[in-house]
Image (cartoon, one colour):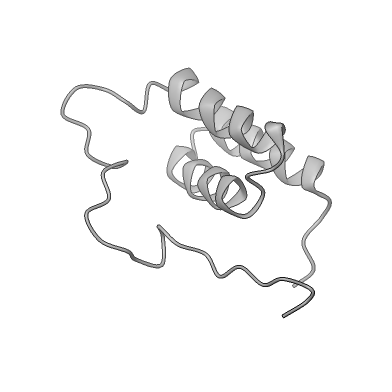
Length: 81
């Protein structure tokens, strides 16, 4: 599957969150952040979702990561190998 531009992916995160698909929005926002850490918009997208939807409520452990899983890691490939 070919993903749309990075800006469109950020828009998708915001739309998912707006229509209460917060879990999907959070997963996509986190993946975008991991794969595009050099883009300020990636951090902003994740930050807005977490704090805008109050995902950091007391007792909420969804952002806790004690081990590396498919949801908490990405594969980074460089052009030069």
